[in-house]
Image (cartoon, rainbow, N blue to C red; front, side, top):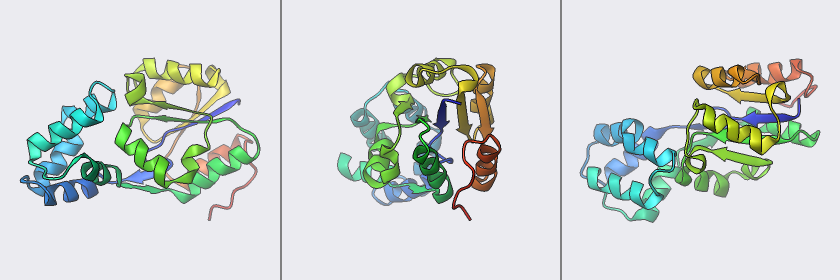
Length: 205
């Protein structure tokens, strides 16, 4: 194993779009249900997360659809501030770094989310590289973005260990010969990493 690749959302950080929905709705003409539906299901979020539109264009689209009354800075705070770290997984990553494993972030995400995580969670700076959908112009499970991971790591096949919570994303990694762990609970993932011999123990409870 030469590289450990982490998904971000639901693996290293939890998130809840309803937090942003409530805040946006409180400053909009839209109801809570409309704001939440827009944030979770609108095609504009997909376009934003594959880099087809800018942050400014995303904000303008939301503002037009919901009647949001705030400026871009306020919107960015509401939309980005939905994350909480998952301590056991952050600690697992730190353990891997301490013993010298190169680690990477591989995420379907957007610029506002990454700005918030980078500004608020110090662990985010401690990776060798970041493969992010909005920068690569593709989203998991599209094979194109997995190729970007292989370029970033300089590895292929079972030299890569990939940790992700979504089965369809894991499936593409398996098809490329990567070693994979389907993340469900931190303790299960930590145990699986220990079974591979990458770490002997962690401080996770």
